[in-house]
Structure formats: C-alpha cells, structure tokens
Length: 483
Ligand code: ATP
Image 1 (cartoon, rainbow, N blue to C red):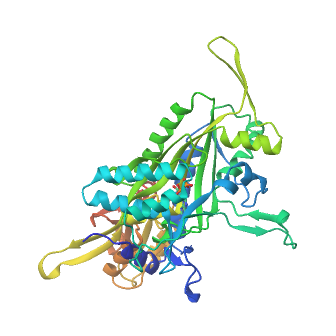
Image 2: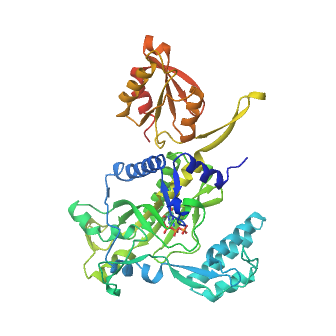
Image 3: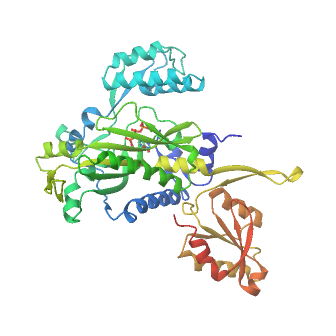
C-alpha cells in the first residue's frame, strides 16, 4: 500500500527524527524540532550540499551571515512591499486560506479528472491576475470556479487581502517604529550585502558564487503538511554572480547541476521534475522549481532563479554604496568589460523540505518470508552518506568475551564514521532497530571472530551477509559513506 504522510509523521516521531515543537504544551503550529536521529540526517544533508557547492567548485565560497539585518535591507529587496501572500477567509467557518493555493488545488483536481487544459488555463489566469495585483479578480475567479471551504462547505468568501510574511520584532527596549527589525525571510540578502566584502577580501573573479546555510522565518498563512511548510525553517542558498548577458547560460547550467545533486543523494529520477513558474516572484526574470513527488503530490523542493541585478542595484540605491565590479577581461573588441553590477543566478533549497523528500523516499515497507512466516519489514533506505549511523556493531551473544570484542571494535571505528554499539535483545531485534533508523551496515561479532578476526556485515537493503576481515572494515564501509 502507498505511504501516507501520517506514516511518515509517525515514523519520524517514534524513531527520534522529528518532534512537534513544545509538544508538552500541545505543540506550536508549523514549528518542529529535530531529534537525535533527525539532526544527524539533516546535518548530513547540509554537509552534502556544502560540499557540492563549495568544495567541488573553486569559485564558490561560503559565508554565515546574521539573521538580523538592517531594516533597509528588506526595503531594498522588495520584501517590505512585495513579500505578500494573497489570503481569503470563509465568512461562515472563519477559516483562512491562501487564495493562490485554493486555485492550485482546483487545478490539481482538473488534472486528476483528466482535464489538463482546464488546469493549465486556470493557472495561467491566476498568474495573470496575481501579477496585475487584481485581488478582486482573484476572488471572482475563486467564486466562478465554485471553490468551497473544506470546513463549512460554502463559498461565502471575504475579499482577498495581501498578507506580509515577515516576522518583526524590536531591538533594544523602546518600542518605536525606528527600532523595528525583521527576522530574515530568506538567507539570500545576507549574501548580497556582503557581495563586495567577499569579492574584495577573497579576490574573487566573476563568475563566482557565495553559498550559505541558515534559518529563515516566514509567517505562513496556512501551514500544513508537516515540515514541508514551516514558520521557522532552514535554507541552503547560493548566489552566483555573472557578467550581464551570460545569465541564461548559467541559469541553464545550474538548473542541470542541481537536478544532478538530488539524484546523487538518492532521490530517484522518476520522482523529480522541473516546473516552470506561471507567476514570477517580484525579483525574478526566469524561475524554475525542482519538484519532488511527496505522498501528497509533486511539490517544490528547490528554486533556481535568474534575478538580474535587481538586488545589488536596489542595495546600491538605498545604501548609496557602489555595488560594482571591475571586470578586467577583454571583450571581443579587445577592451576590458570594465565596471558593472553583476547579474545573479541563485539556487535555493530548503533543508527541511529536502529532509522530508529524503525521508519519504527512504521509507520502505516490504514483505519478507513466505506463508506463515511472512511479515512486514519497515526500513529507511537512506544513502549511506545520509544515514544517522553508518554502522552498528553487534555481538552475537554477550558472553565469552564477544561483548568486549565488539565494544572495542566499535570504539576503533568511531573516529572514521558514526558507529553505534548494541548488545541488548536478540540479534534479529537489533537488526530491526537499525533498519528503522536506516543504518546501512550491521557488523556482527561471533565466535568465529574470536578465532580469525573476521566478522559478518549484514546489508540493510538486501539483508545479505558477507564475511570480512576486521582490518578491511574501515575502507570497505568508509568508501560507501561518501557522496
Ligand atoms: P512556496 O511556493 O512553497 O511557498 P517559495 O517559492 O516561496 O515556496 P522560495 O522563496 O523560492 O520558496 O524559497 C526557496 C526554498 O526554501 C523552497 O524551495 C523551499 O524548499 C524552502 N522554503 C520556502 N518556504 C518554506 C517554508 N515555509 N518551510 C520550509 N521550507 C521552505
């Protein structure tokens, strides 16, 4: 049977991956905590991204900017005026919706009913109305499409209003407007305002990139679907600065490179696809999403955006500081390209969404055995590089020195990769424990080990066992846990 989001949420909680925030107080909507296994998986995802971006590219460096930024940053970026979601309330149920999500839901319904043309036309019309900021038109469209509230079943809608997604707070003790600052709604701006600092101190030459991983905050109107849409989440963004006129080439390169990354960490090609935007964000010249097939359908995990010089130009205007780069390379006439504000192609992926995609994809239930002995086995088919533990060392029994031998082996492996020792319960039970958290290799110390220094490796996915010498373990497992 197909995996439901409930299966995922349940497994994530039961095995220490994701907990609702402040659960003892009944939780806080759209906020989640990562548990002892979740933090490892998430860190491994972030490390894979960081490596793919900075270690594998000579011309990309990382930074770690603060969450708080000067308030003018968000004026320049367009977030104060334009970072809105259109919201609509149902007058009977008082339930609040995102107007665009109601229409997208309807379009999805058309798709399911085998009417893709209708779906396309609806999305196009929605994109047109939103771009023109025709909010009455959006409401009329919702009514014309016969969209009803899921709770009240009526279509008694209020007008559509723009709702700014930024959280604000005060600095210092005086609650005056001038002291109001925002929690960053994206990490990108920390990169833009440091563009020249990095370029100069690192003697970077265009084209070059700056990468960053960090928290971002959005007051999402409707927060559903577990960690897919959170109010506090983590982004992994890379801004790539290019010479104007070359942006299309780089946009296409990054579009391809990012899809490759998702495949490399184990997301299957058939569950990934591109989705071109109907409606462009306020900063974008071209934008494509990489979508993953979640249990609730294909949804965005990453955006690749061609942002022109929108951000740097606006920062130059508001800060009155030149955001120019001098390009000494020669053009076709043999003259230096000279001063210009670079164009930007960005890649932006949510660490939490990537976590959810990876987790959903790894969650596997299969039947093993036959007849009366048939049962279900649940395991996480995680890429070894992402698994919280790479190996578990298990003594077959606790007596006759096997436990001590296994403990010593676990200790010797720890510094090479994350290893857990477990001697509690029957061996089958201990395999299951590791399957449930996705440990790819179980190393068993048995009586033969005491004689010839060999152990068995039991492989998570195939459940097959092989006998190897202890001295081979580090290399054998080590090379499989890198991406
Ligand atoms: P959506 O349309 O789903 O609201 P978006 O297009 O606003 O997303 P971007 O602003 O392009 O998203 O952000 C880049 C990435 O950040 C997204 O692809 C997603 O992975 C992640 N992201 C954005 N908002 C959230 C959120 N509320 N919770 C978790 N991740 C998010």
